[in-house]
Image (cartoon, rainbow, N blue to C red):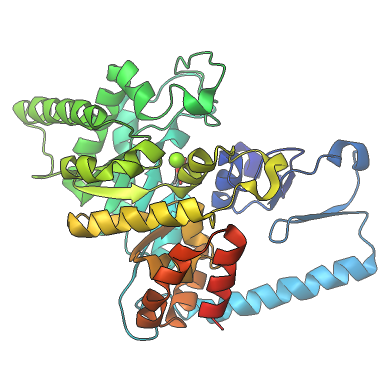
Length: 403
Ligand code: PEP
Ligand code: MG
């Protein structure tokens, strides 16, 4: 990536949030980043020495010897923690009472594949393909996409790979090859599958490339921003046509390709009972689901605590989604940043989640956390979590659960 090649060691943003796509990309690049430092331009000058602490969201301008010593100590502690966690690479993910949980990796770029393997991921639970399209003038063609997906599938050595179709739009709009519309409210506009259905050739090219890669290992296709069952039907029709076209030219593709929906629009979550029969699996995108349920922009740090994954509405919706998927016998995973955050691990297990997908850097820590939790005990607390009337009360129940 140009940033790393140009020797950038860290980034400080005057706006943004930890859930913005720049932050997700920075994590993928292992680039320390602090967002929402409103006065950064006023207080940092060219040539200043600064410490960028992406872990705690702190920027120290002109650090003194004490600051530097403090951070060196912290860095050494991190190395020790990393060494301890590294022993879990080969370990199975089990709760304390022996319930197996599956941890998949999210991937945005080729380097994530090696990291996923290194952390013992069960596969790729979310490959964000839009990163192939960003920061370039022309749209990657079928061959280029095929090679990227094939290498991803080969790199995972037979483990399942979930490739998400293009999710451009909203804050992932820096792809000048794709004619994005000028919209007053892009987060509620032509984004994800809506964009793909307005530009069928874009979708067909991508589906063909994914199908061709499917002959190299297990691949599933995941569609973002599903709101209507008709959108699933449209994508399935395109997929069937692509399968037919490729087979008729003698192209090898997998016998069966599963099609799944991201559940990140509240309408799809609320009406999931009817929708789920039309897909093979679902993946919960809490980054967007939380923003749309709470009407709180995921990329706006001025909203403070309003963007709260512990809001009772979010907890209830997650619980319903998981129950519906269980009843419909459809695999369900959760691939938003919540899956990577150990503050939420007990909550998600208590609500019944068994498949997590997260950036590979978080995987061992989550595995370690799961090993300390008793599954049967957590499930007993689910009713109390669902009764709580505020985010603070949910947090209180969570604290008691783990005391
Ligand atoms: C999500 O919305 O939770 C998600 C995983 O997708 P993205 O962050 O790419 O929008
Ligand atoms: Mg999303």
